[in-house]
Length: 459
Image 1 (cartoon, helix red, strand yellow):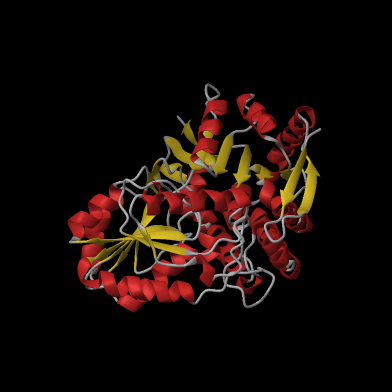
Image 2: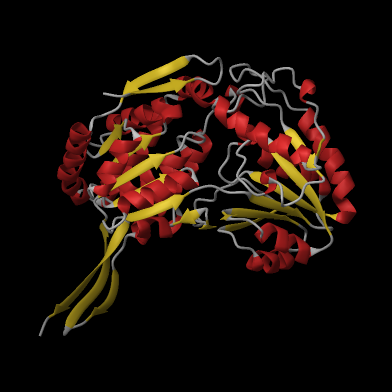
């Protein structure tokens, strides 16, 4: 039996350790979920919604324990209070639209026939959740999946083992049957074996491109539906008419919050040449005002990265960019907590090009490259020059211009005068190497259910 260890980025200690389920026990867990799913789906929709939302209430009641747990597990400072606002917003929205999203669509109801389209649960939904926002990302799928009548098997990242346990504790306390929502600890081999055996009816994965490829290989030939959100290199563009101070505050927060470990965080910024020097000057001042340190201390605004190896990758990208001519504007000595390990000073790079890894590969850390552009056309070309397409942020006072630029961008979501935000009323999706699928909004329910048609001829 293999052991999964959670090494805390706070001090390098083993914070939690759990035994991974062997394949036979994991197979039994899925069988229990499948056996319980039909009874769960037979409950009235209103009852499922009530139990799920009571689970969210129960989760919020654990706030005082969860917030420091998050700091210990993945380094987010306690000053931000966890992820509860977003969890409530997303769960509440999905609950509020469920009745309409899952309603039958009557095509004909006459003396001759009744014809209608219905939505049936997929069955057993497998959610593989990431560590960077362990509650928010899980809730994106877990909540609508349960509401739609599915059973859910949750496998959380090894870096946030306790998040899955907390979710199970909350939903079970709210009356969701233990077999209907199960948190499991699995290694990669068992995970892939279950998928290859067609244990699940839908697999939702949030993680790396490599992880997504492994999921697709495991599912090959099984016809199992998948939803994959695999990463990003999200750009921001500051037009000449932008509110400069708002753009700096918004984009730098989008680049540095959570130590840059955000799926839709800003990793590259393009600024109209007329504002470039002023933007860079203000961005440097913004970064210098941050406080890197122990995430359990209230004054800390930036904690460590979740793992030493993640920080090492960012340091490599920065060093390579500098060797190729980029200038680093922040001296790491300004952040004494930078220990060469998980604690990493934030960095701004200028004189960058798209030949540098830091402008092309996902960094997922507190570094951002800033480039001047002459006009919208150049910005669009550079923003699209990426293997990823999750979100893009445009800063301007011209809504029509944002619409026109956004129409040219190869991305899942276009944001104007904000960034690093997921609106639950809109579809969370991506293109290119960011993956495929649809989460949240009414389209999220379509992914978690299958179409079922009825043609009832009466005469």
